[in-house]
Image 1 (cartoon, rainbow over the protein chains, first blue to last red):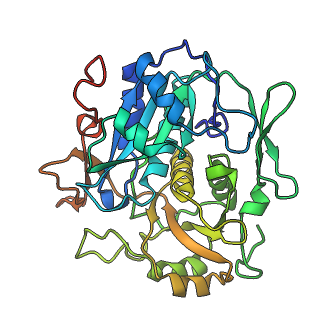
Image 2 (cartoon, helix red, strand yellow):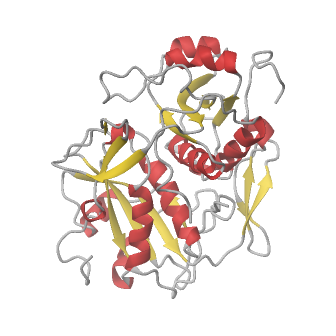
Amino acid sequence: MIPFRENRSYRRFHQSVDISTEDLKSMVDAARLSPSSRNVQPIKFFICNERELNSLIFPNLGWAGYLKDWDGPQEGERPSAYIVQLHDKNISAGYSCDHGIFAQSILLRAVELGFGGCMIATFKKEVLSEILRVPDHMEIIMVIALGKPKEVVVIDDIKDGDVKYWRDGEEVHHVPKRRLEELIWSPDGLLSHSL
Amino acid sequence: MIPFRENRSYRRFHQSVDISTEDLKSMVDAARLSPSSRNVQPIKFFICNERELNSLIFPNLGWAGYLKDWDGPQEGERPSAYIVQLHDKNISAGYSCDHGIFAQSILLRAVELGFGGCMIATFKKEVLSEILRVPDHMEIIMVIALGKPKEVVVIDDIKDGDVKYWRDGEEVHHVPKRRLEELIWSPDGLLSHSL
């Protein structure tokens, strides 16, 4: 069974647990084997599991927008690795939704290998590009934070349309998800059977 | 092992092999359990496994842009089901790369259930919207064709940067993929170890 349910967005990790370069490459390989719009494959991957460089990347990332009184994981609970997706503009002008496809493959593979992570689309692009020495023809489009999860994340049924995730007193992270019945849409009478 | 390699873009199917509504719902559930930007979940899913409606959907889809002398699967090899992703503009203005994340989950789950499919981003939006009676506040963003695959798809190493897939004399579909070494990017000297 593919671990869709186990693949939650994790933001606190056992920072001391390293992820090997081999495992990171295996995650990128999962992306490599995934569909790319018109098969153009214009996205490159920067992988990092070095503590010093991790500590330079970390301050440039935005964490959990809905948790207003939380600035992100503290020292000791930070990601032990990153995979950064970069658009190579020498290959194509756009990249459609390839980065979403690839990120999902990377995270599912991470879970399969005993890790977990989080897609991060909010980051200080200019500073991060300097740190990673990104050349002009490339652009950072997403950072995937990775590590050995150190938090419990549970899925709740959504209430009153409120999509904001939250943390309870036991530090459990709650994510409201729409129910299947709400997501499956059909106009009245189009299908011969009811869903 | 998650079937990333087995999950190829299939465009010819055993059309007579139905996909049950239960299986289609299970694929949508895989999308439901996947990450959504800011957890907004603004995408709805239309599922169809009815032959008559399938035959109305089919002519509005674009197939395999690189195969210039092929107009898509012939009768008997067409998809037996579709999952259409629609943006619900009443929920949010945008949807980031959610549709890519969701489509990958749907296709991986399809493979796990013994099926396969293809993401289709080229379609006659206006006609298709009429057929599916899509209201003004919703917009079709992707059609996922599904069925029991009836073709062999193999991955080749890319040659001379040519990303165009092609079919050989035995009707085997070849997809050139970049090698892992080409996809993993790193500026000289930034990491302490070589990749």
